[in-house]
Each structure stands twice: as C-alpha cells, then as structure tokens.
Image 1 (cartoon, rainbow, N blue to C red):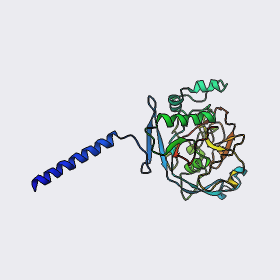
Image 2 (image 1 turned 120 degrees about the horizontal axis):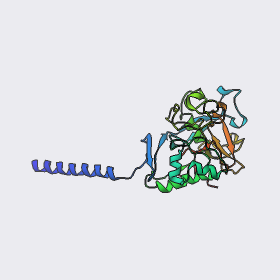
Image 3 (image 1 turned 180 degrees about the horizontal axis):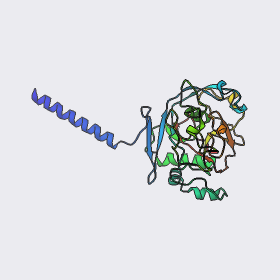
Image 4 (image 1 turned 30 degrees about the vertical axis):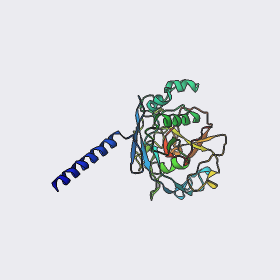
Length: 295
C-alpha cells in the first residue's frame, strides 16, 4: 500500500512541476479574466491595455445636458458594446518611435510645421494622420503577434467604443467628462494647459482607470463623420463605414476649451491632416467587431 502511495505522490509532484513549467514558458495570452494586460515592444517600451466589459449604455447628448447639446450628438440612443480592451494612456512618443521609427520632430517636419508642443517619451504623439494611426495598429499586430490572444487585433476605437470607455462602461450616473463633472480634474485644455501637451497620466483617471480621454490631444476614431449618424446607426457595435470627407476624432485637446472636451462632443477632420493636437489611443478587439479601416 505504501509503495502505491509513494508512486502516486511522485506522479502528482511530476505533474505539478510540468504544469508550472508550462505556465512559465507559455506565451502571453489575453482573456476576459484579466483586467490589465501589459505588452512589451521588442527594444521598446511597454504599454497597458485595460479590459472593458461589454454592456448597454446611452450614447450621445443626454437630457441632463439640455442646452449644451450639439445637433450631431443627438438623439441619445441605446447601444450594445462587445467586450474589448483599451489603452490606459494615449499612444506616447516613445511607443510611436519604437514602432513607426519617426520622432515628434520628424513628424512636425513632415507636416510642414515648425513648432512642437511637448516633447518627451511620456508625452502623447501628435502630428499624425489617420492612415499613419492605422499603420501603427497594423505594425503592432505583426510585431506582437505572439502576445496577442487568439482572435484579437489592435485597431482604432469606434466612436461607440471610445464613448463607452470614456463614460466608464455601464454606470448609473453619467458625467460630463471622463471621470468627473469638472474638466479641470481630468483634462488639459486651453486655459490650464500652458500652451502645450503634457505627459500622459498626470490628471485624474476615470472609473476604468483610463487617463486623458479628455484634453491633451484629440484621438482618432474608426468612423467616417456623418452629422446624422445617430439617427440610423446600428444598435450593436456601430461603426460608420460610409465614406465621407472627414474622419471622427474625440476627446478635446490642450488648445481647445473645456466645452469641446465633454464626452458627448463629436469632432472631425480630413483623414490626411496632421495637426498639433491630434493623436491616437489603441483598442484591442475581437476580429470582425471593429475591423481596421485603412483607406
């Protein structure tokens, strides 16, 4: 009997050791049990993606903002969002340079400009147009292929994903800004920005632990701009793929007033415009939910 017990103990010990070794050597994978995932770019920085549980929320300018609603932010409507991950911070200059190979000074020159408005590894990247932002996603999907979960891809947020994340997911009381009713708590905007971008993560985060969704730099979204999109958008995971003259960006920036930083505010510009106040935030979604638009 003792021999059998001893043999069983050896087998159990061997199985546990093998399991631990497998866990240590297995490539990084993402699942819905993780709240934060850290990716590391070879010879570059690490960056964090925060899990956002899906749900139903009210998108657009709501009744509590009467008198402050823009026409294109109405009507407020119910939208269902599938789980996804979103960047804890806006894409920094260090991450951009490691993946895309250009610095903020070089992007400034490419844009035909002469001034930069905040330089440093932890500052948000700007002077990038829409196609460059999507190229960043494509490059990350290749570079980090062995770290990605099966069936997931990096992309830009849809307007709906962006607003859902900014509102902190599903919650009872919506706020004007991402994490506060007061812009100064969460955003760098004209009047307090001292005419520059700022290192990411300096202000208060929202309920999901996301920083700078308001102010600092505007953030490119997937959608083409349509003033009337909310009147006919799909009820689940909407993305406006109908080509127009402009792409959407959201969140406000360091050189605009606090009104334009409000969560419900929609803004737009030409896809190939490189400006002093426009950057990008990554999302990680299931393939097919928010397919990367590269045109």
